[in-house]
Amino acid sequence: MSVAENLERVREEITQAARQAGREPSDVRLVAMSKSQELELVRQALDAGQTLFGENYVQEAQGKSQALGSDPQWHLTGHLQSNKARLAAEVFSAVQSVHSVKLAKALNRRALELDKRLTVLLQVNVGGEAQKSGCASCDAAALAQAVAEMHGLALKGLMTLPPWTDKAEEARSYFAELRQLAESLAPNLPPGSMDELSMGMSDDFMVAIAEGATLVRVGTAIFGERYYGPKK
Ligand SMILES: *Cc1c(COP(=O)(O)O)cnc(C)c1O
Image (cartoon, rainbow, N blue to C red; front, side, top):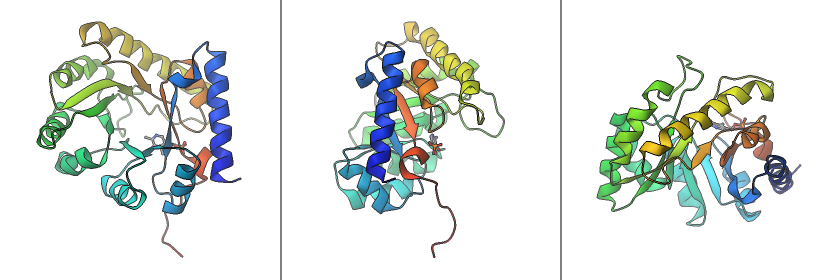
């Protein structure tokens, strides 16, 4: 299957899942997770009309962004260290993985220097897994309040990466938890601060859409398996 065919299938499944949930398909945006994929495959996706991509490493995204020009938009979905905040604020239109006030402050400072308002989502560790990045659900309210006051950042919602499972249905309760958290935070924040829910990947994005996802992050189902080894 080509990237273009995969994209078409994924888009159809998004439409189907949205309709089944009584939602508008256009309310769900596809983030094509291009991390560790060859530039050529990313180019094929771009040619097939996909303009929103997700990356986990700042330098990798910078390289792809320089090679592919100004059409695509890049979202950072991986762990970011404060010392890379400057480059991140330059390369990405949104950072989905804000997990601490310290990181938010660093991004805010850099965004203000660049005279830009950087869209951010707060990454919440709904599964409470020790090895995963993200703020604890119980800390999300304080983090959201702090970010809402930073003029270089535009807070738009929450992102999560639930505990790994090979059964999509097992992720449902985590997706529901993220939605409920956003609903509980929204009344105390500026309008629009909790509009976006980034959740769902190749194996479970249809379940995530049923639970309210507005951004689904799909990699393997579009590009095939990621290849991390040395180049042959
Ligand atoms: C890789 C990745 C995805 C996509 O995973 P697939 O299973 O390949 O669709 C989604 N979100 C994040 C944060 C990722 O790192």
